Each structure stands twice: as C-alpha cells, then as structure tokens.
Length: 309
Length: 211
Image (cartoon, rainbow over all chains, first blue to last red; front, side):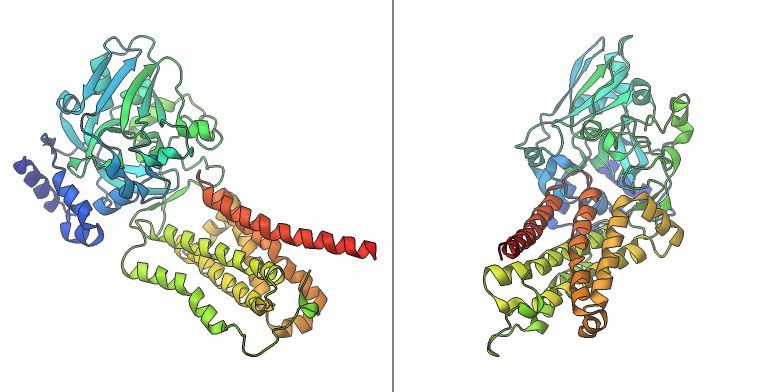
C-alpha cells in the first residue's frame, strides 16, 4: 500500500510539467480546511493502481486537487458549487451495493470490493467539460465500463444503459429540494457505454473518490458534458428503450440525451464555443467531442448532431 | 406619486442621515470581496464568483433604492428621502464593477467575442441594457442635469429605473441553470415595490376623477 503511494509520488515528481499540483500538500493545506486534509490522508487507495500512462490520458496540466474537490456540481448536496464539499460528509459509502440489472443474462449485485477486483484499476487523465462552459483536467482512477458490462452479459435486446444515483434525502440533503426529479438518472447508448473511454470510476488523484466527486462509484464520459457522468451510482440498468435522464426531463430544449461536447451547437442561453479552464484566466476554444473525436466520432457518423444534441 | 416638490422636507437639523456613513456601509460587500481575493477565497472559478457577487449586490442595492419612496410614504419618514439618490448611485457603482468584471475579466476586451456574446447570450443583452440605463441615470443624477433637462422630463427619465429593475431581474432569472430560488425572491420583492407604485397611481387617478 505504502509502496504504491510512493510510486505515485515518484511518478509525479518525474513529470516535466507541474502536473501534480494537487499533490503538493503545502499548497493544499493552506487552502483546504484541516478536516478535509485529514480525511484526504485517510482515503488511501486499497488496491494497486496501474501506473503506466494510458493512451487515453491527457498531458495537460492537471487541475489542483483542491479545485477538483471544492468546485462541484452535485445537486444532491445543494446547488452551490461548494455545497458538495461542505455537505458530502453525510454520505455513507461503506456497505455500498451497486446492482446491474435489466437486459442482461447474469444480473448481479456488486459491492465495492467486487468492483475493485473485477479489473485492474488504471489512471485516466481526462478533460472534463461542464455544460456551464468551464473545464478541468482530472486524473481519475477506474476501469472501462465495458468490463463490468461484459461480466453481466447484455442480451440481444440491450440498446441502452441507464445509471441511477442514490436517493436518500437524509444523506443527500439537496434532494429535499425538488430542483431535479430524484433520483438522478442518466443514460448512454450501449455502444457509447462499451467505448473504451467510458470509465467506471472509483478514485481520483490516486485516492479513493471523495464523496463530493461521486463516491464510491461513478461513471466518467469525457466526450460529453459533465452532467452525463452520473455519480454515486446504485443501479445500472441495461434497457431496450432509451432511458430518461434527469436534466433532459427537466429541460429537453436545453439538455439533450446525447449532450456531446460540441462547440458548434450553442446552449439556447449561452455559447459553447469557448470554455474557461479552471485555474486559467483567458478562455480557450472548446474542442469537438471535448478533444476525443479520434475515439468517438464514429459513434455519431449517421447522426445529425444539431438535432440530436 | 409622492415625489418632488410636494414631498415633505426634513423639518429639523437634528435628524439628518449621515450620507458618508451610508457610503461607507455600502462599500462593505466590496471590502469583503477584496478580502476574499487576498485570502484566495474566491472559489475555483474566481471570475464567475466576482461576477455573481457584484451582480447580486447590484440587485440588492437596486431593490433598496426602490424601497425608499414606499418607506417614506408608508412610515411617514421624510428623513430617508436623500437616500434615494445615494442608494441609486451605489447601485450604479456595483453595476459598474459587475459590468467591468464581464468586460475585463470574462472577455478581456475581446471585442469580437463581446459582440457574439451580446447576440448569443440573451441574459447578456438584458444585463447590458440595464447597465446602460443605470449609466444614464447616474450621469443625470446631478442637480444641474435636472435644470438642463427640465424637472418634469427629469422625473419621467428617472422613472425608467423601473424598467432597469425589471431587466435586471430578468437578466438574473435567465442565467441560472436550474435553481431559480434567488431570482424568484428578487422578482417577488420587485413585484411588491412596483405593485405599490401602481396602487398609488390608481388611487391618485380615482381621486382626480372624483374631484
């Protein structure tokens, strides 16, 4: 365990760019309240992390640990950006179960230990583009969602995958407000879910996923706007019909089922051409599919992306 | 409406509002903002934070400005009358900081992007129009302007603050993604403040008819 952490540190220090800003505890301890620093030290990663650099990983400067864990849209804990940081301690992630059901031959309920043993945990440094036109670069830890789906064996009718987040207003006080239809649901087409970029995620910055980032298990779909990446998942349902997604239900004109990052299709109330990378002053151009065209553009070859936004 | 010449003046010298003190108090939010900037407490997205913070306080001071007249009439407090201009100017001052946070921090003088922004983002042109309105009102708030424009026309010009307030609240309403709690609170307050004026207007008309 300790050796693993050390290897991660070595990896950080060997980089040319200052990519491991969040690893610098001195800076973090100035900004993060002490309690958060302590909980951070407690969240050691329980299994070895595959340290070799993934071909899907970005080389860009990573957003600091402090910003990644303090600036979140996670309405289950409130609509303010820092609400999740302040409220997410209420979430109890031990004894967590995630059931995978629906159009599968082998429905199964997994606990987190099952998941951690299911496939090697690898680091994936992904860009995250929020629909609100800001972005981050985050070193996630997880494995391709396809590996989980292969275990449960989708049937011939499997066309979509639905993700359902925890619904418990006691643990998630934001759910006392009807700001969204609870529980939070999201969905992907099955071929999107099987794409090697779609990551079943259990950690970030080489550590167990902090609660405010969707602990204990979430998905990360880096070519889509952030809200497509459901957090704190309790059910994965493989379906024949297109599932509902919370934001789409709330406002179908503004949040489509696909919600691929697309600089050419504006949100009805603001442009998506540019974004502000957290930590940077000047805006940068938003890339098609958030820069992941190489791996995902084929999925949408026959799709009118202005209609299916 | 109980404006201008018919307004009762503060009767004695003993009861006077300390205008510099009002200015000092009103600058507190700005002091808080600067302190937060110094201590790196502007969240991960400082530009967004500064924009939202100054925008929020612009609306608060706008509502306070619009409260002066009803408070003076309903509670018979002629004392508060000079506050109307002071609070109006403070509102303009916060809107200026808010506007500059967009122009300088958000867009960094990128004129093409600014133009596209005005077209792309409806909430930007609502906010922009409201700001231009406040700018005109601030410039014409000096006593000389009243003389130059003519008092009656001046009064009508300054009634456009109602439109500015409506635009400002719409601006806030359509920029939030989902949680409309705060815009709704501002809209309710504005509804009461404008509703009061409509009632006064209707009553005045009726009285005239009876005569």
